[in-house]
Length: 221
Image 1: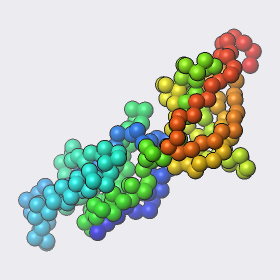
Image 2: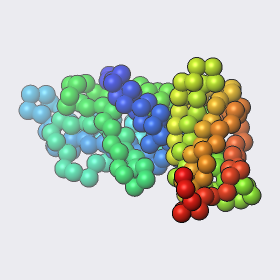
Image 3: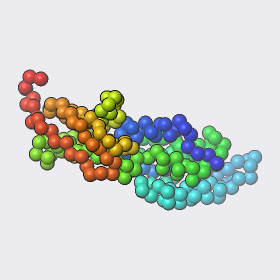
Image 4: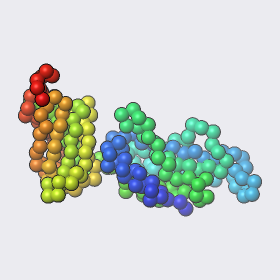
């Protein structure tokens, strides 16, 4: 049976690292499967087999990927003969993403629902793995949206992760190790600020209060 190819895993991992695939993403597995009465002339296949694989994937997703409330849906387009194509579909900032996880037409194999689920389980950001950071004004009340946050290793200065805060001033980082990080915060209209913070996955949200007040638009930079 087929599993998720290494290149697909890398693509998903880069989506996670870039912050476009988060634990809050509403994801679904979209399946295009053949519904023809006689799926092929050479093989005496039956359309029932395609249906069974679909139901098996649906069951596996509910059991193994319940943490992400993963839905399994049928693709809207008319299915191709012999197709059993599985894609992960989600959107980020209203932009739709679609990554093909498995193609029967491409591989000539039937999928393994268990291997598909295991691959996703190992790559997807879990709510429990997250470090949440919130950037606020000096009062600690008002969240600052569209703030660039960069996490660096304090020893090597290598950039570990970067993100932009949402409309509530929050950003999340997945799959980072517990420890010290140099955190650089650049908010529109504020001075750039840096701090050395301990970040712990699954811990409370780290709040960074910007000590500077917003610069007036006509002030010299």
